[in-house]
Amino acid sequence: MKILLIAPCSMPYQHGSFVHKYLLRMGHEVCSFDYRQKPPTALGRWPLISNHWIYPLLLRTLPVKNKLLIQQALEFKPELILVIKGESVLPQTIEYLKQQTNAQAINWFPDDPHLFNAVAKYNANAYNIIFTSSADAVAWYKELGLKRVHWIGFACDPEVHKRLKLTPEEQAHYGADICFVGTYYLERHRILKRLADFKLKFWGPHWYRPLIGNNLYSRYMGKAIYHQEMVKAYNAAKIVINIHPAVMRHKGLRANMKAYEIAGSGAFQLCDKTKGVEEVFAIGDEVVCYQNEHDVADIARYYLEHPQEREKIAAAAQKRAYGQYTFEHRLTRILAEVG
Image (cartoon, rainbow, N blue to C red; front, side):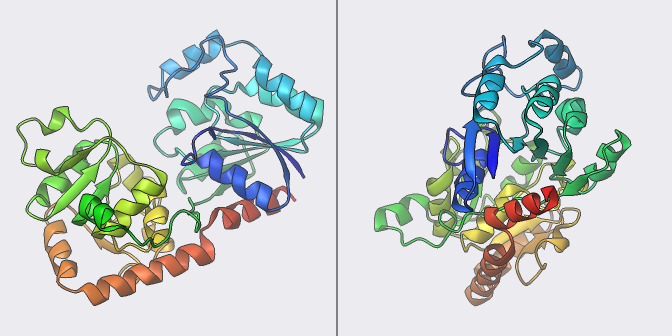
């Protein structure tokens, strides 16, 4: 099948890069358009907009047709258009491409629930099928009039997210009792403060200012790490902690991308109890959950003292991830829905 993939895919850790890789491996002809690297708008490359009142104003300032994208699409003549989020791809552009190519258009929107009102709902009706990362958002899309809406989880890549043999230098640099990788959020700060007495290391953007005068400062390892470097950190830690921001925890996300990456990496995951996580991983057997900042340290201490239990749970999570939650599994499901 000839598939036009419209997605961020210039960096190897981006969602679109994994999708492109596995579509090719599944035998499809793929033409990729990275709408962030090749901005099809008069605004150029603009940052993610999360304020619900700003995005519709920006849409009005964009050209009626995203010229670069349309030109590439009409030359390629796709049988299917697959968009990953596509915040600067106009709905008018998608409608025009469907008319000109007779292709179905799918949006795999990985930032629900937190960006549904800010971005997704303004573009959704241009697509034949929506795949959303939030089970709760399925009903929200249907309220907009869409009929073909499905929840889909994230994925891992067994060629990237796997057990690694680290050098002594890598083990010394990344090694920790507890590891965290992620952007600053207040709830994440609160959880990590409860773990400051352990050998803790964490990475991620926007942490510098909140850490001034804080007992966590010495545990902060610096800017965000991705892809293979992130997997090294997961492999070097005894416990990898996963902390969802509140809006993701309560509105049907079930588990974020990190949950699948940690599992695929063969690491032991201590995760907050998100709504629906038990539908993705077996609690106690494949992932261990804490309820809040008051019990997280005690649970971490228990599993640090019981390495065999940790290893058993980590192995079971990796088996589940490789057996059901790879990018090939997800794309097989998406293409089956297209028919």
